[in-house]
Image 1 (cartoon, chains in turn blue, green):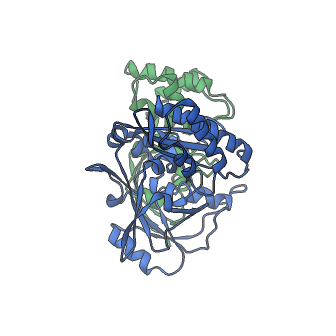
Image 2: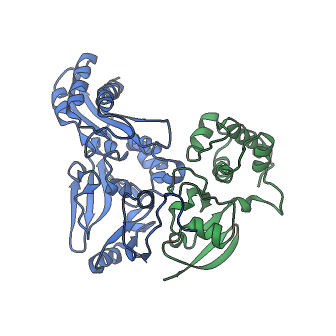
Image 3: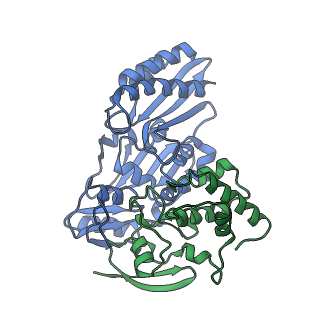
Length: 295
Length: 160
């Protein structure tokens, strides 16, 4: 019994399992026709079942699940490098992440469910590029970069230039995201994150916020604010960041800065919440997150 | 075109031929007749299909069987010892941890893994640990109680 009520059948697949990146990139280069890179499949299969994505029979899938070159978490000097096929559960428990950038581990720990986190990957979350992708706000405030490889080149793309629209990234059809990199947190850099969903677990974000703050002598030396699910892409609130930089790190200033965020976000109304509510929450949660960073 | 895979399921080794688009759920339930693995949402949103893959709870509806090649899988059937219920299962019976039973096998696999990996989890930790399994009947209270009681059993050495 393949078809269940309202649930669409998976197309017939042509399954490729490259042993390493060279083979994977070679495959992408050679395969004519549509090709999907797969790992956890935790976005792919639900999207097909819902009818959000549909593919013809004979879809080529290139499985990079568990590929050694793509599943490590390393600290290289002051930079942390996470392989794109690293599972979310590994990020949650990684001693390297917990020590140097716990904001990321905490954000990932509230994604989906335990079972999904045991399959899903950070690269998958980024490449599916939902505006509500929960790995995005912490990675954006950490100033992360994405390493993109194709058969004949490799480049480092800042994550805040990686997302192009809902579900769209700068990746071409022959590209693979291989790694996410970001600097470790210094002692004077404070981060905080909040996820708001319609329930406390196993839920898509109605809005998510991450903040990164460096305060010097009671003044905002630099500020980064990122939000998910309030714009076509996960976004940095650049106007608010500019407003706050150089000002005193007080509750009143934070309140005004959070108000700038409210004006900056461009949420839609959807099944989870309406735009007005999201704007309101953008203000409230940014304020909470900034206050938490400063105190 | 069918692909050959090897699976170890409940400590037995199988050499199987599967369609590339076949889910692990279908192979376990339909091919290997392990009926404890249930079909629910087929989208990874309910947890009734939860099995242990290399000791970790996963939604078997989100894993292609070909991706599980070489894996070690445990389903609820694997927790029985010569037909005897596992202490965790007995705890669910004694503490009314199920009503219709549809979500139960998924909960049991998740709880089994949770208890194997933590010493006497708090209620908070249990609730966080079972966040990926939904139940429409019980309101979760007795599920949490069953898991807490099972933790006591494990602590006293009654476990396998």
